[in-house]
Image (cartoon, rainbow, N blue to C red; front, top):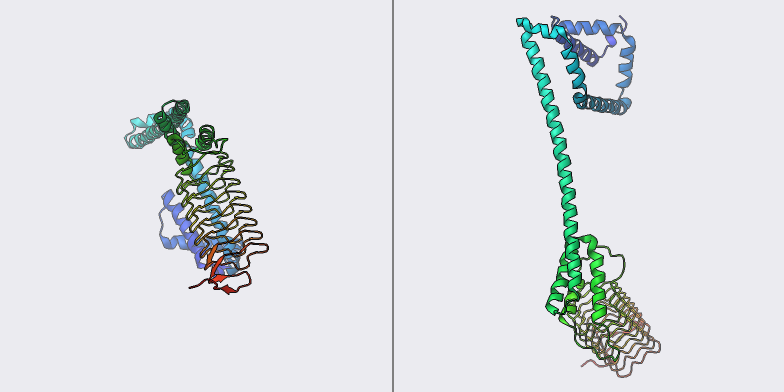
Amino acid sequence: MQYESNIPKELIEKTALRIYRRRIKRGIPGTPSDDWESAKLRLKKQPRRISWWLLINKPYLKPITSLFWLITALINFVLRALWSLSFPFRLPFKLWNLADNKKFWQGFSDEKEREYNLEVVKAVLSGLGLIATIIAGVGLIATYRDNIEDRKLAQERLVTDRWAKSITLLDSEDETVRVGSIYSLERIKKDSPKDHWSTVEILSSYIRKYSPVPEEGNSKPISIDVQAALTVLARRERDIVEPDRLNLSSTNLSGANLSGAYLSDAYLVGADLSDAILSDADLSGAYLVRAELGFAILSDADLSDAKLWNANLDEAELWGANLSDANLSDANLSGVILIDAILSDANLSDANLSDAELSRAKLSGANLSGANLSGAYLVGADLSDADLSGAYLSGAFYCYTTMPNGEIRNDHCF
């Protein structure tokens, strides 16, 4: 009796609900008030349960107990789910027991038990139907997967056939056929990403083979098929990681249209790009050592970190181009147009910039030691922190030009 006043109401409610459910399940008559009294009497005989309930419901222990009940509920749910899923495996044993149960079959002669037995038979038949449906579903899934694999194999065979045919047609004497083959390879490259790099290597090899820099040094404009191969390479996908650099070294690309081309990190060592159109092209990090870029159009091109030492850019147009961190040592930039170009931290040591148009060019931090800037237009140019040691500046035009020491020179402002 000492625990009667300490029995929590919530515990009595839970116990009474459990007694109520059990009573209803067994068909025992009673009322909710009877269940309540039975719960109180039962709990009076279980003082340890009351103590445990009071302990686990303390405020500082509630998070732990909540987690415990959550884990318990999850385990219970998993066990119930596994039990339900095991029904198809348990059904044969149930059918065996049912078939061997003489009392069950004799019950069909009794009018009271017949209806119950019929419901049991219906449930068994429904279970068999469910098993058949599951087996059929598994079969359909297996068939579908086989069809997908067959389709993949068929597609790979088709790509391989198209690939082989396109490669063969590259050696055709008809230029139109060769151009069609090149664009067919581009289509294969898009349809099959795993063949991307193989296509790039084949087309770059094709250009190196059929358009090399002539030994006599007089390059002719490129052919239509070489331009087609260049176009495909120039617009390849940028988001695909390539295992190596695009190699177009020592190739004749004179007069090529590569506007907006993606040639980042490409090898173009000794390539002839004279008169080529490379406006808005991405040549960042490209190797253009000893490349011929005379009269090329490179306006707004990205040449940041490009390697251009000993390159020839005579009369080239680089209006608004980005040449930051580029290496242009010993390069020929005579008469080049670099209006609004970015050359910050570029290496222009010993470069020839005579008569170059450098208006509003950003040359902050650039290395211009030993460079020839005679007759260069430096109107509005920023040469702050630039290294001009040994540079030849005779005849250079200054107007609003920021010098390395921060001084503004206006020698030729009108």
